[in-house]
Length: 127
Image (cartoon, helix red, strand yellow):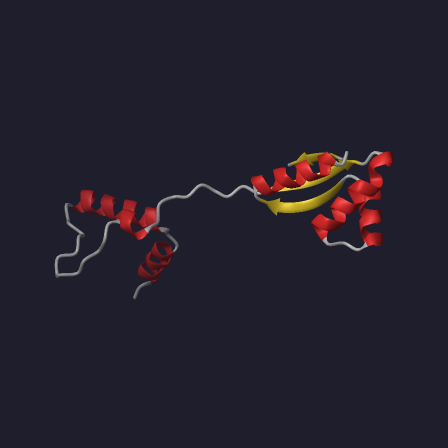
């Protein structure tokens, strides 16, 4: 193979599926040829190859923003329950706000955690 042929082949290998399909259409139009399979080989349409596009799953972070001094013990209990931290770790966590309570979770879970913390007096945000 010549260097030119090797170079063209390398460029073709770097194309994605959409670019390849566009290239085939352009070659068919330019040279008036048909690139479809005719020897009994079935090539399914591109739409059948790929699953339907699903929306991206958005994740949220629950951030403990503020802990009123008179509500600290109640908030500490909820934080321990939600995070599984020990007493000392949970105390340090609550005293060093703002802190992420949970990260990369679904919106219903984030709202539930926010509701639990706000019910004991914490100021919480979902980001």
